[in-house]
Image 1 (spheres, rainbow, N blue to C red):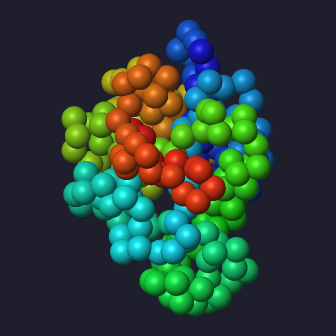
Image 2 (cartoon, rainbow, N blue to C red; image 1 turned 135 degrees about the vertical axis):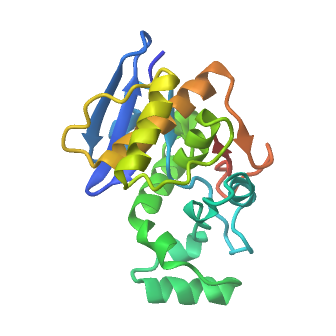
Image 3 (cartoon, rainbow, N blue to C red; image 1 turned 180 degrees about the horizontal axis):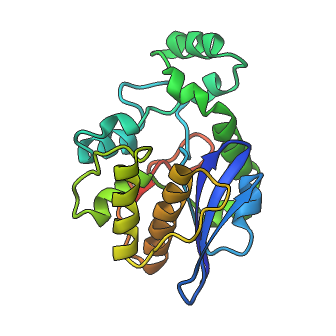
Length: 223
């Protein structure tokens, strides 16, 4: 069974694949559809399933994730509602979101391109729906850290070293990152472990089992 983890990066996606014998490979792909090829599970650090109207704190799974990440809750943003996601500018998106019930953070809109890519792929293609799951690297690292969030920034040498040690201690020693940004590569490996846990039936799901958006996409975060 081959599983993978994907983290958005400039121009595409950082993808970590784990083969049946446990070998890890890091790659860059242009589209998430490319990342899905040959995988049984792909865990993606990107919201899946969007609200039609904003609600305080975002989706149920986002609120639950923040509750588990004390001191790191800011790493979980409230995903845009679907109407705002179609806007061309942040100003327009924020206005749409406010009109529907609540404002939109600039951080969330900064991922609009990747969010649209994921949403379009899963709404229009059945095969990816069967394998793609939403994950969050900070939840993955917290699980590896005995439930305690890793407070050191992944962009600092110390934070990167700690995350490398946690991954190695759980059998996911990061391979050479090549030209990939180190933080994106480490996040891809972390959510690859989440994909492996999902495949083993050992992952934890945040959000009610029946939570679906208006297009039938699940609104869950796995770790």
